[in-house]
Each structure stands twice: as C-alpha cells, then as structure tokens.
Length: 193
Image 1 (spheres, rainbow, N blue to C red):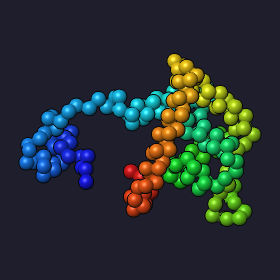
Image 2 (tube, helix red, strand yellow; image 1 turned 135 degrees about the vertical axis):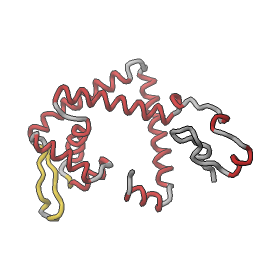
Image 3 (cartoon, rainbow, N blue to C red; image 1 turned 45 degrees about the horizontal axis):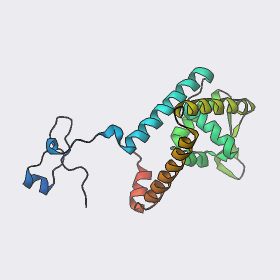
Image 4 (spheres, helix red, strand yellow; image 1 turned 120 degrees about the vertical axis):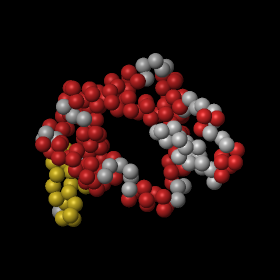
C-alpha cells in the first residue's frame, strides 16, 4: 500500500514518518521533487471556493446583516420547504449543534420559525417567516453578482465548459467517495475532526 506520509517533515524540520525503503536509501524530504501546490486541482478548487465564499459572506454581512451560512439555511428552507432540523442538518452537511447555533441567530432576527413536529414530539419543523421570504430575492441577487464577477473573463462557451467539467469531476468524486469502505465512513461520521 502506498504511504503518502513517508518522509514528511514536522514543524521542526525533522521527519515524522520514515518507511523501511527510505531508511535504507537515506532519502530525505529535501531530496524529493518540489510540488507546485498552487496549480494542483484540489488547491485551486479549495482556494476558489474559499475566496468566493468569503466575498459573498462579506457582502451579505455588510448589506443585510446575514452570514453566508445563514443565507444557506434560508435558501435551503426556501428550496425544499418545511423540514425537520435533522433533515436540514443532513442536507447542509452540518452537525446538529452547528445548525442549532445558526437557527438561534435566525430566530433572533425573526427569519425562521421552529415548531414541534406534531407527528414526532422529539423533532422540530423549520419554517421561513414572511421577513425571510422577502430576503430570498436579495440573497439570490448577491449570489448572481458574485458569480458574474467570478466568471467575468470567461466566454459563454468557457462558462458552459467549466460547468460541464466540474460536473464530471463531482460525479467522479461522488463515485469514489461511495467506494470508501463503510468502516471509514462510520468513523468519519462519528468524529468529523
């Protein structure tokens, strides 16, 4: 099995792991070829998503006093309608505690209503308020502006190609994720850190 962590230095510059083959050949981290991480696919996707999210978050906070995460909650409730907290947490890939904090802030702002589910007293149903329904168009408009800026230098054909290619990558990664052993997925769900 390939060990991706062979010969990686720790913060002090000493090696954390050393395979038997590395010991015998005296290969050091400094002998390994340098990798330009800035042009790697994963780095580009991560950095693009981070900057895109940060820009939207700053605009949302400055213009209508909501975070990007709060906007996501409102958009998901608008898109999928009334749902339980558990359903929304799963859809958003958040822990229940993280979602509760978001919902508490949105309730304080009068944008979300939470009521006991009459069919299951342990569950809560989430509803948008009239005030939040009015904000949805503004949230979508800000998302559209941010997207236009992100894609400004791309032709319509390049935009379509980018969407097509990213869709293929997402399909590939979703398939690969599904092929991960169930034991690894269970450990990850139990301890996401």
